[in-house]
Image 1 (tube, one colour):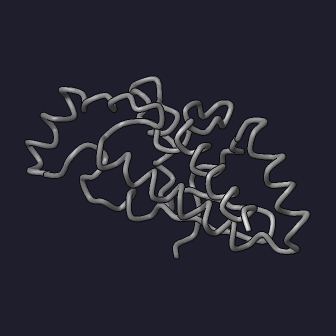
Image 2 (cartoon, helix red, strand yellow):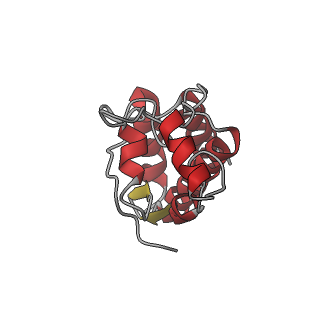
Length: 153
């Protein structure tokens, strides 16, 4: 697994997840397996966003600017949106411990896509809103389902 780098976002899971995790923590001394599973869920969801070219809210990513398409054509660079070399996509990973999970990209330029820039629209992959760190409803629901599976005997 590669090193998580480039983007650090404190994810806000809402008021639903924290109490459920606290319930689970009262039963388990080490939440590492749960955190690893949460990381795997988020990895799967982010990979799906690359496949569908949509952000966490399900909105399509903005297409490449005309000048970028022209530059890529002149350079004979192939590939689709955000996957010209697949390096960013393949650098996405998670790391977990007994009370945390970190997800991120091993490519620092992923931050430009997650947050957008003055010249480039946001093409979010991790959060609905990177300023607040709010996870997508789909991500939160998947995490809640996972925690419930651990809580149910």
